[in-house]
Image (cartoon, rainbow, N blue to C red; front, top):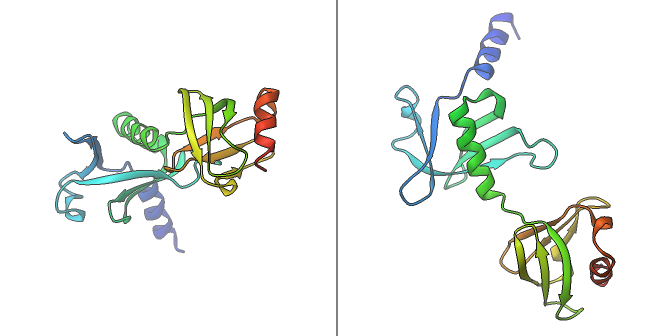
Length: 174
């Protein structure tokens, strides 16, 4: 690649993104571009903001997708955005990444699935319905993700730190 192409590519990656991400009156995230970029979209549209690497590298590789899943904006790193853009992107990510942490398993309705787990989470006491053992995924030796019947994901950050009763109940499922 010649030096002028490298320079142009470098300037493109470092230049600030020219977009506005905001919530509309219905509470949906909407993306619009300035007049120069507006040719890409006919009008502001509802979007979804997702991380490419949510666990390994949460502040890099963020995509703003149309409702059809087409990538509209790729954000190399949050640090490249201005304060307003960064706040909007982080707000959209927080809403999408709702994942309460399980702090304690109080009881389970059965040791066969489907069953109801009565749990304490970082967001309060609740119940989740476990459809099958396959809905408990091990991310590491200490970290688990538990998905309930409705697709809500719960995180167990540090399995060894759970109380003995909770660990005994979990041992029955895997």
